[in-house]
Structure formats: structure tokens, C-alpha cells
Image (cartoon, rainbow, N blue to C red; front, side, top):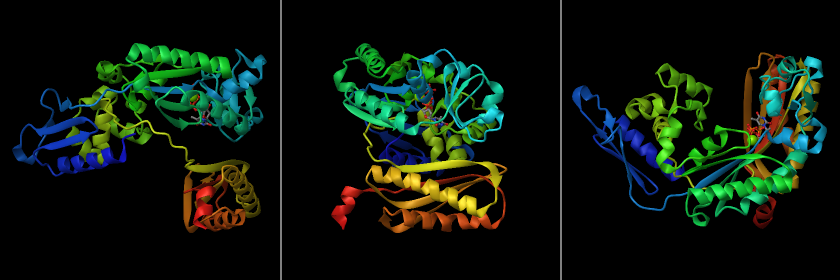
Length: 415
Ligand code: TTP
Ligand code: MG
């Protein structure tokens, strides 16, 4: 979330805190923070802000108003739109459940299915156990991608700045076109209505002074929600939420924080930043800032695709080299076709392997030159998978990813 400049500054501050220097000042955008020691006894500095734990001074600059829009149960909502007879019933999009013997995962499910405990990423066999009566639909990537483009085209029109964040979510900076939060709320209602009218789909919107807060707000009361968090309410809004709501806090960080008694964002905000930095390095300083709802990162359009990937879970775990190679060739073909469609040359190829015990490895190779040839891709994939096949262990899933792209247009200029 934080810009690279901000991260660099945080790095320096974190170092100063770790080196126990007497004062550390941190400037992010227009805000300046001062970490100050309260005592230096036994070389054990603690850093506090002048009033509470640290000092937060608004130096200059205009406050921003940011919207985060996230479509509700995106894939299943599209399936419901295409099949009105699904409405009101639990719907799951993902691998074929094969009456509980299926082996892939749930991509998403609608809110009716969520009541049974079904979730994204869960094995489809488990979803079947929880809700055999649900309607199970295969993933129709092509359709969802087309709808996503239309949604993004609608959203782009409503922001001074626009940034797509995933297939179904985006940030809008609406600072110059809304005088205050009330006007931003009117705009958000208009956007919700427009998406329903044009695409027949429902979304949730969060409004806040930055991307971090807007994103947490859009998730707060899903589905079909509109949550506004003004600058002055940020810390109160965040305080009772679990730390997992913060971007970058995954299960491991959550566990580590729990071990030192931190469960909520409020716990984190009140923690000694020195100890956080000692425990988590630079990430500790970032966590501390996020817990206070600080995020000066800009909304900026990134048109580039970062990577293209495809995975496949085998019908049965296998050590059959022929089958594995054949599957990887097919997956390579699929990612290759996607790259060609988008006029992309690639430089990095990565394979993913999941063994029968779910142990998962990835291994990548970056070429000296960019390529757009399927033969190159398939050859490298074969080299990369070799080490994993030697063990003779049974494999559950394989995947192929290409990244490090150069657009074909630019490439032609280079040649
Ligand atoms: P999300 O926005 O995370 O989920 P969602 O839109 O289905 O539900 P929510 O109402 O909570 O926002 O992801 C967008 C789409 O991305 C989702 O519809 C399906 C896909 N997806 C996967 O394929 N696998 C996953 O593990 C997740 C989380 C999402
Ligand atoms: Mg969504």
C-alpha cells in the first residue's frame, strides 16, 4: 500500500529505532511523525509520541476522499444473472464436486451458500459435505473477465484517479469532484445504482481518507453496503477489528501478533513501536502505521498485467511423468494464449507443484531475453519440473505462471 518512497523512509526510521537513536522523524507525504524516547535507562529506549504514543502532525496538503468498490460474490453473482432460476438458492463456482469426490477448490460462493460455511479456497469436496444441495457451476473465466472490463469502465469514469486492484475491485480518488464526505456518499450511491442498471450486479463501497481505510470499510458490512469512515473516526473504526483485516497481515503474522497479546487493530495501535520493529523488522513500523489508519499511497492506474497463471488439480495424485508433462504442456498453452491475446512478451517462467500431503513448492527461471514462443515456455517448464519429479513423490497439483512482461508494441520498437 505504501509508496516505495514511504517504504524507504520507514526503512530508515525502523533502522534508527533498532539502533536506539534518540529521535526518529518520519515524513510520509504531507504528514510528519516523531518517535521520541521516554528514557534511556539500561539502553532500553521506548518510543512514544508526545501526546499518546507518538506525534502525528498534519503539516500541509489537502485531505483526500477515496472510494473502494468491491463486487459482491462476483463469480456467482454473474452466474445468477445468467441463470435467473438460481436466485435465492446456494450457488458455488469452482471445481466439479463429483458428489463429494471432486478434488479442486471453491472459487467463490453466494451468500446463501456462505450460511452453510462454504468459503473461497475451500476444497470442493468439503463444500459438498457442507451443502450438497447447492448449485455447482464451473469457472467461466472468459465471461467474468469480460464483465470485469465493463465494471472497470464504469468506475474509471467516476474518479479523478482510478486503480483496479483485482478482478472485481478498484480504488477511486474522488477528492476534486466531491467537496465533502456527504457528496462522496451521493456519488457512491450513484455508482451502485449505475452498476445495477448497466450490469445487473451489486457491489459494496467503502469511503475513507485513504486506500487502507476505504478497503477495510467496503468489506465491513458486505453485501450491498456503503460504509463511510471520516478522517476523525478512523482510529475508532479500526480499533475493534481483528488484525487480519489489515492488508499484509496473513495467518502467520496474525499468529505471531497473537503470541505477544495483539488481537485487534486497537491492540496493535497501542503497542510499543520499538518492540514491533524488533519483532517484525521494517514490517513492524508498517504495521504500526496501518494500525493508526495511516496510508499516503496514491491511487494510480496500473494497466500492466503482472502475471498470467493456470493450475490444475489431478483427478488422482500421480507420479506419472507422461501425464504430468502433458498437463504442463496444456497449461503452458493456456497461459501462452492469454499472453498473445494481450500482446505480451514474457521473461520469467515459474512452475508450481503441490505434493499429495499439500506441501507446495514454486520454482522459477528468468531468461536473458523476453520471448513470446510457446516452445520456449514448454521447454523451460520441463526443465523446472525435473527436480520435483526425481523424488518419485505423488503430485496433487501443478501450475504454470509467466511474468516479467514487455508489451509486444514496445518489443517491436526494441527489435
Ligand atoms: P472476492 O472479492 O474476494 O470475493 P467475492 O467477490 O466472491 O465475494 P465478496 O462478496 O466477499 O467480495 O474475489 C473476487 C472473485 O475472485 C471471486 O468472485 C472469485 C475469485 N476468487 C477465486 O477464484 N479464489 C479465491 O480464493 C478468492 C478469494 C476469489
Ligand atoms: Mg468481491
